[in-house]
Amino acid sequence: MGCSKNLVDSEVLLTQLKGNGINASHESNTDDNNIIIINTCGFIDNAKQESIDTILQYVDAKEQGLVEKVYVTGCLSQRYKDDLEKEIPQVDAFFGTQDLPAILKKFKADYKHELVGERLLTHSAHYAYMKISEGCDRPCSFCAIPLMRGGHISRPIEELVKEAQHKASQGTKELLLIAQDSTYYGLDLYKKRNLAELLRNLSDVEGIDWIRLHYAYPTGFPMDVIEVMKERPNICKYLDIPLQHGSTDVLKAMRRGTTREKQEELIYKIREMIPEIAIRTTLIAGHPGEGEKEFQEMVDFVERMKFERLGIFTYSHEENTHAFGMEDKLSQEEKQSRANHLMEVQEQISYDLNQEKVGKTFKVLIDKKEGGYFVGRTEFDSVEVDNEVLIDASKTYCRVGDFVKAKVYEASEFDLYATVED
Image: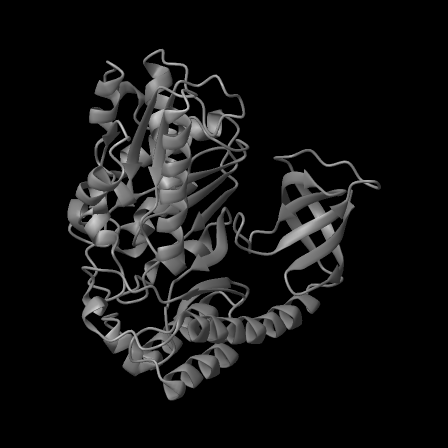
């Protein structure tokens, strides 16, 4: 359940189980599995509810004799273990986010160090998420991740390069770098922010055509990362930088350590260095302290910045976070209404930016075939969250995992329609 970071954890567990000779599969379609492991998300209300519903579904299956055991791991289990044990005693065992060896013990299996860096992917092999660090040291008011994932721990460059080489040998062409805070990378190991050095090393791995950077915290952003992005053609001109709000007062309440002016200055500086870059950000609607004035400041911010990609979350009042002590005044309906308004503003921005792509040719990575189209992405788009390029499958054959040159002939708010050029 949950984010790409959880997906990586599931893939690591799957690799360790299979490495121990245990027949395991990811989200199996068959009904002959006797043990279920649910890797939960505990980030916001909706995700928690989905995780709980899934646990209850498999506990019910256990009571019907359809499965023998149900194990629960991941963020929800880390955060609410005691409560869950009381409320859902039918679960055979609960594990936290760092309990992989303990899960393996349940199967009389050992943690195999020789498998570090190897990972069985749960999707097409042409792209892979790479978790460069774990945990977070930031004090953001709304976020419960440090409660579930602990403090920031970077993975060594050598280990990540080895993993990238292994992935390339299996046919992976795109690495999506993920972390709770990727720009903090290296501070614990190398006593300095070392993301640029990591990018250089990964960029040298033969067979990796695209490297994509996610979750770059804006405060103290290391500009040498943009220098490397500029000089290395296989580092995508793409940056996922969660800004969270466009009002200085709300940013202060969020404990983000920055202001609207500083955020704007950073974006202008990045765009000055790489004019063609696609910037993705996420914003939160309805954080405590966000009145009509502050919300309008965020709308103005979005209109002024014209982000190429934007995601909106509604604020979720999470216990044991700093913001939980603030008054959560807005109803869920009002928060959603504000989020919808922001997305309407963004739709027009995205439509206008996409119209500029009509008539241009892009390198496109084909992800899948769906609904009569081959569906791919440009270097300016990440998997599942961003724009897609649609190529008519009745006119052109494309192979999933291949790059094609595609000329855009039509564009909507979030899709580009293209024909393949020889």
